[in-house]
Image (cartoon, rainbow, N blue to C red; front, side, top):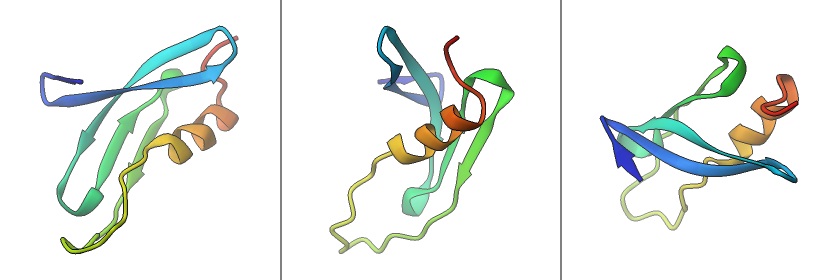
Length: 72
């Protein structure tokens, strides 16, 4: 989902807590994500064009959710 220069991906923080995380994606799989609790995640990567690497923002969201739980 795309809106106002942000992509949104659905993240299931825990049972009964489903939310959408706004993020900006850049060249080479760079990512800036805005998480609940005032956290900002930044991933800097360079993925070659011929690579089979798939884009998955979920691992960074899991770490952020452990630092500051998204849902109480």
